[in-house]
View 1 (cartoon, helix red, strand yellow):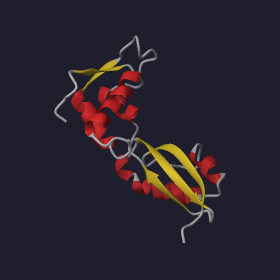
View 2 (cartoon, one colour; view 1 turned 90 degrees about the vertical axis):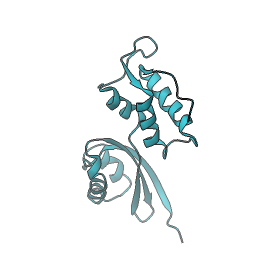
View 3 (cartoon, one colour; view 1 turned 60 degrees about the horizontal axis):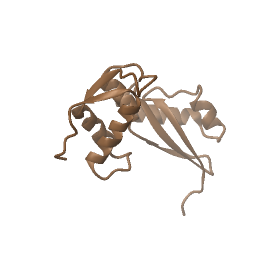
View 4 (cartoon, one colour; view 1 turned 90 degrees about the horizontal axis):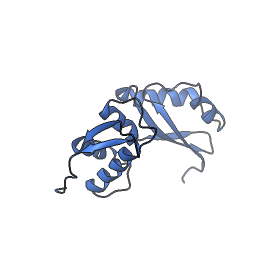
Length: 147
């Protein structure tokens, strides 16, 4: 018989850097989860993604046990890395702060494909392009139609 789920907790934590301080400690402590056990497991599984911001969905069961799913870094974070920026534009419709290529967008879309609700790579690329546009990042060239 399946365990009864008591809570779903969604957090964004840097890879290999989970510790009991906020936001991890209070979010897990309020649900009765062993915070240090989570931190050790998370840091062990994210050792190769050191320092990257990773969304994590923690499922807490009625007996206070848990499991978690680590997702890929947000498209906005990957776009900032590709464009070598610290943050996007404050007025994205007027002020453009950087330019990326469609190859960069394709690489990000391929990485994010498992977390997006898209069946085709071209659809995923359009989603990432929309994120870039909302951040004030231009995309150089024409959309590749051969996908």
